[in-house]
Image (cartoon, rainbow, N blue to C red; front, side):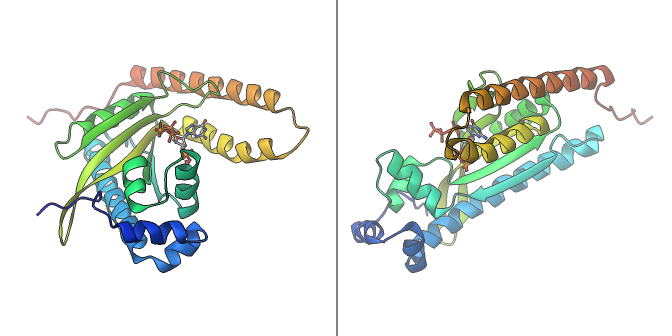
Length: 235
Ligand code: 0O2
């Protein structure tokens, strides 16, 4: 039996909109908790797929193409903020329809080529549908942000049937991850402190992103010089 998250009740939507804050809402809502549980489940499923690929590669090539995997379900405040900023209501239907990144999985790799290898292997699994790709490595953002983003849909099996769940997978190198986490921390500080020269801070950050990228390219060249480990043929 198949069910879909797009089936929602009108009464529920009124209840959600009446809540004083996202936190107030979730305290009272088992429906919201149940939806978040479904997002946690799709994260677990994607993490397992990635761990399997990492294990298999490490046995064959004596190194790991994945340095770390970090996952999160978007917080109620973040969900509320993103929906209202885009003019959408804060309802179950709206979350499912309008947000692609409630479930987020971040994969950090040693080399740029590992990013594309992991993306390719994930895309080729027949229970995964790739809905959207944003390649901020080939097309970096003007501030210097680099990462490979995929929006995927994966079926998750619950007691009452199969539900297609969406998640965002961000794949980046250790260097890109370092830059993005510093940028994320500074973002809030630089906009909040009056009198700061925001433009020069942004230029300095963009320069750092270029340095990180040059280092990533050099590391890739070193990896190519060494080559992948190949298991000797058994006689
Ligand atoms: P958080 O807290 O990380 O979840 P879309 O709906 O896809 O058209 P969206 O959601 O802006 O638009 O997608 P995009 O551009 O692919 O960016 C989504 C996520 O990428 C962000 O999530 C960040 O995690 C990351 N990201 C994008 N641009 C930057 C950047 O300039 N700096 C940093 N540090 N991270 C970035 P959220 O929801 O903004 O935040």
